[in-house]
Length: 318
Image 1 (tube, rainbow, N blue to C red):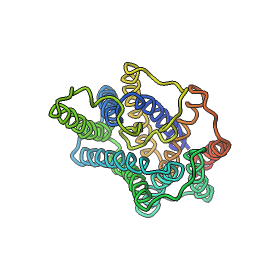
Image 2: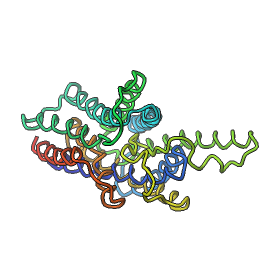
Image 3: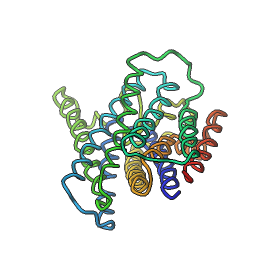
Image 4: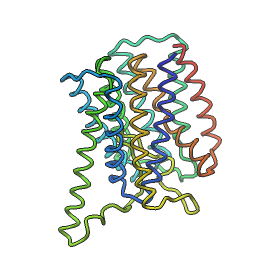
């Protein structure tokens, strides 16, 4: 029951981080937002790590690094598939695959056993993930095989991140998250540095790579993306460049907190349950958009939110 509650709260925090990252990505290039979020999240984890007195061991460090690599792969595939579209199909598909992959791993490889209500809750959670991740108003078109493959790959990478965290020892504290976030920060920082160097060679200023260029998608270091607000119209709240930097920093701290909640949920419960509830992260984005941006929540998304709560209750007693 406790692990399900922690996982559900973690999903809401994930969605909140995505919301902040999405706002920041309206002014700053997506990879810049991701790099800043990775660094701020790493700083937050380094401050919190001594409080949990985690033991450093080679296997836990290795699993953390592997998780960081998976998160970078997830971000790259998310950008690619969402740029291809349609988001209304590829967004929920990514969320569902990110839940199904670790769910099957937990049930088949870890031997997770649930009560009948728990298995029903997993099914309800998957339906809820589809509905809350659906982007209404977008013209429905048949997705390309390439877009589908990238969405599935992104979901698998997100799921692999959770599986990697689940392999870590209980006495490692936040060590796996620290090494994972450090890996992500190094990779994304190197990409931003490469872009700046390329700009200098073209005779441009290094800072010219910072503003938005191309599709303004925001993503967090765990591989989640701001799917709901990737392409918003005019008349919405748009942060200044200075505010965008602070939003990116806040995004990283919120995402690190969500990672910590997911890790604690894994250590007190089953991977199948945690993965199913974590996939409901778009709910946090939707709720914040409704409160902060006064955006209308579509009827299908309200149904998804209600099912999400129902799934959380069913899985709490699984």
